[in-house]
Length: 420
Image 1 (tube, one colour):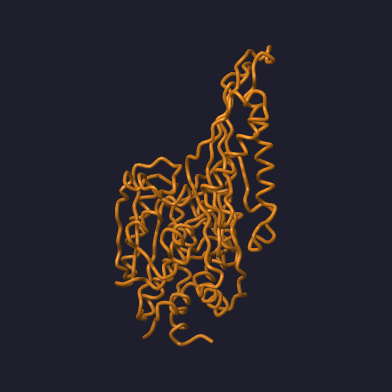
Image 2: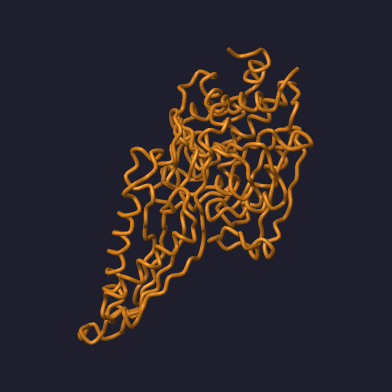
């Protein structure tokens, strides 16, 4: 049963305004590291001010952050970045709603039916880069604070909104926000969760393999050693390592056959069609197990590559090199008995939705920074299906957006002690 205060807050949600905000967010092409990412942070700051929040917006001190021993890595080149936090008042927030404004590039433009940054609606779904991951979640966070302002309710304890950059390539924005001292009792990140509570996330480390070969004319390839042939030995070793690491996984990953995937994303070899390639560079993504120290995960990968190389006549004397550039996502988790789980589950149920199960996600996210570095118990609950994230025709069902907004508004009312 909803109280009059809870009903008042929910009735103050404006679904048309929520859709309009989501379209406006999508129409800013805030690809990670671009100027548009910064432009959107400033625009978002104005929206939060208009919603009555006290706003802290600051230019990130990139040299200092990159030199921090705990820096989580990045992949996109950038010359600037901005942090943004809005709060309803002073003191430690009872609830933090966090969302990232950056998106990945669009990929092949020919695979999009419309302008990827137009935010078009087709039936019950809204399409566009970032619609699912995660501008719908950002729009929901904004809708929650607007509803609370519109309702005229007072909060006994503050609510905060964190808007971060660079989540897609490592978490610079979340890292900078926590280093600035922003905190909270608990946090919810409305990443796409398909009507579930994500209470744990695997890690993901970016690796680079440099594999040497020996150049020769293609007509006398027996005089050379193809770096591609040498790489095949390593690729098979990585496949076996992936099999071992996924042989016994946490029950939270039920139904996921490979939660700790090893995937090679780029492969570059040779510089001339009729030459035996003397160098191959492969970059990929390496899954980190729940509870595993990323240093241990890296050591296991490096040992696998070294053992495979030692078994090969060429690489025994010409070993490949392993480095770890780019994003370095450790795993993260919320304690299974933490009260936030039941509170979020109750809020979902009490707005008329099925009670969501707790699951783990196979990808890295800002959850691990909030829960680990920030010491803030954190979970994901938000609109969208992650299978649409980073894909052409990225989309989100509007019904899921509205449902998430109702559930998070109710959670905010209860956690922050809203009253007339």
